[in-house]
Image 1 (tube, helix red, strand yellow):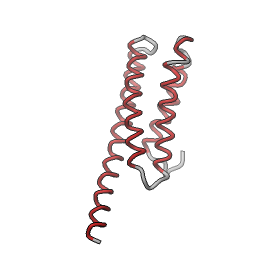
Image 2 (image 1 turned 90 degrees about the vertical axis):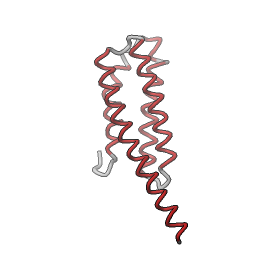
Image 3 (image 1 turned 120 degrees about the vertical axis):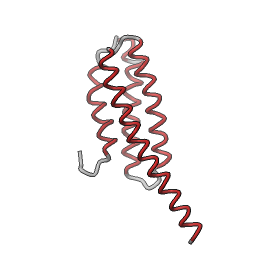
Image 4 (image 1 turned 120 degrees about the horizontal axis):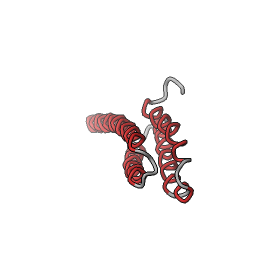
Length: 125
């Protein structure tokens, strides 16, 4: 990936590379339900973060990515509870999702601080 790609995008991409083969092993009836929702959820997060990296108005996109990540956590927990993924795979992806969440939270926080500064500057100017 290019050097200027935000690290959180790389983390989501890496999680996708890791999880796609596991989703392909879901039972046939779940491949088109739960597995597809998990795959699309991660792809949506990746696309939203890429879009956020190319726009000035990042905050709403980052919040949407964060909400999608929370939905994804529940879908992955469901997959574990239904025994479609084993405990070690669940632990790996949960750790990755938590790291993505921390990185995303930091990005959101930096945008919140930046918008507060710019609002203060507008008020003074």
